[in-house]
Length: 116
Length: 109
Image 1 (cartoon, rainbow over the protein chains, first blue to last red):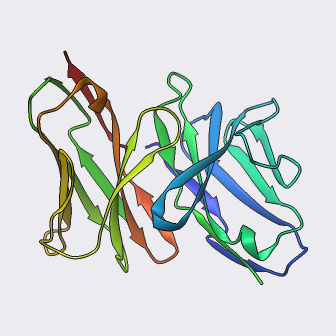
Image 2: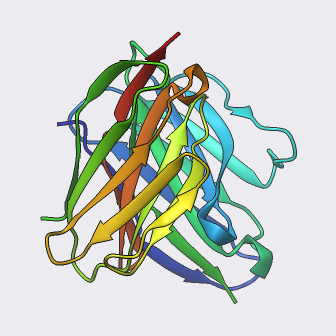
């Protein structure tokens, strides 16, 4: 149980285009989903927290107009990287939290974004 | 199917105890094994292991990987209350990470 999927696994796009990444909780309802970006040396940076039906809460330094997060249902959250630049190339990982605890998170496999 | 299993799920110890956390994995095209400590929302990176038998050490924490038996352990010696957290391991495959569900460690004063 508690499986989280991400789609796509890997995407290559051109500078200036937008890319949408999906995060789905397959067998449970996630009221909260978290989006992370992985930086060199494997550190994970929390980008934002999204709660179903409400606006996402962005961490300091994360551009909300560039990284659009939508949590339309209890099983789906999307991250759209708008006007992508090469420096946005990274590994984006989502996790889904169970209703009873925000610290009990289940991680997706990640999406590798390459912007050329 | 790729999977990572951590054990135990939860652990309560007293300060000064030594704990060993386990992580077994089955991942296609395995590249590395990572350990994280999660206290709040964002996990903190601890170790990345790629070679069998080579211990990585940072203070009271150490970790080792066995690629033949497909597991890794994380040791914490002389535990402190500040070690209380969820410890996650993740196995890296090709363009993906498979996370375990974590071991919740609570250290009592």
